[in-house]
Length: 78
Image (cartoon, rainbow, N blue to C red; front, side, top):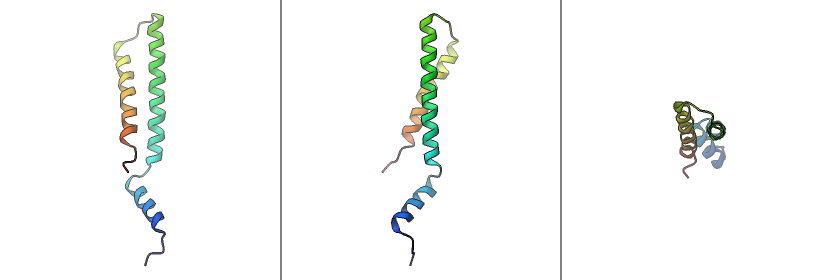
């Protein structure tokens, strides 16, 4: 009955169930990279002897844990 290719139909159904998945993954990768770069800069400042507020370091560590976790949870479960 349907003139749609079964593979295309499967792909469209998958996309309708998880819209913008590619965009989300790109954002998680960008945010993860930014968090790790920020942590590296903070650690280099600590190594130089510059004092940082502890809550800023904890926020950065939280971001370094949160964004890669979201990236892992957003992967394909096939």
